[in-house]
Image 1 (cartoon, rainbow, N blue to C red):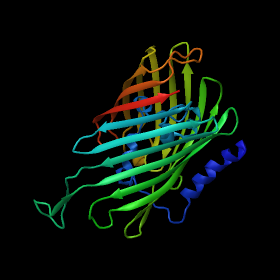
Image 2: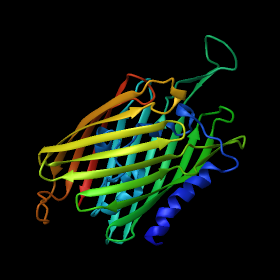
Image 3: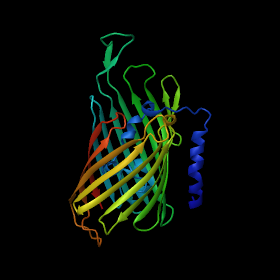
Image 4: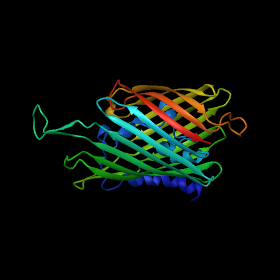
Length: 331
């Protein structure tokens, strides 16, 4: 597909989801996959989720699948988010470059609100029973080069929700994401992605929910003289409104990255009643070299990376979350 065709295709896909005759979307925490608001990836999370222009990271399958074209060989990533109230959230991702021709990835998010949820048929002090739940999002991603500067990508999504024997609470969803990137120069990448332009969730009673579409525009810039990079994203979704994101990363040493970021919410929701919220993020990455690089200017090749991120809880105002991510990068 020609470059110009891709630039036309994304808004057309968005419009198809927006004006679908059966369109009904959930809002806020009511959406079936609300746990994806926690985000994924060690560096992107600590940088406030400003990741649309990021390349060479397996988390690109989640943020912008076009970024998979920056992967050199293959990478494996696993993440745990420490949640309260017996909740759990785990993430696993794999990204690969097959002979500079095929760029692919697989991502899996597994969330549970706990195994001690209470079920009642009516008002009572004691529950009739307790049950556990499991929510899963799986994504199969592909990236491809349209030209030396342009790249595109897609992610096919499968959503599964199990709530024990609760009637009409279980369901299955299918959908996709699409994205493009443009390399302005060797240090600057522009990105545009549409998440869930049409993702449909179907319950046991055959009712359906269309997950709100999220559109992200962003740029990532590497500052070689300052030994770091910065990223800015402008995100908009149908239920959460406009949310700008800004993040920065600095390498004081080759084996240590310091990161910080900020994102602002509640700018265009609540009919002007809600006050904008400013959310700060921070974190660091430890790079354990496994092999020296043969590429001039790059001191290390294969690496094992441990990332720590401290982020605000998108579901609970004022609370913060800790995330630990481990990534094996084979260059």
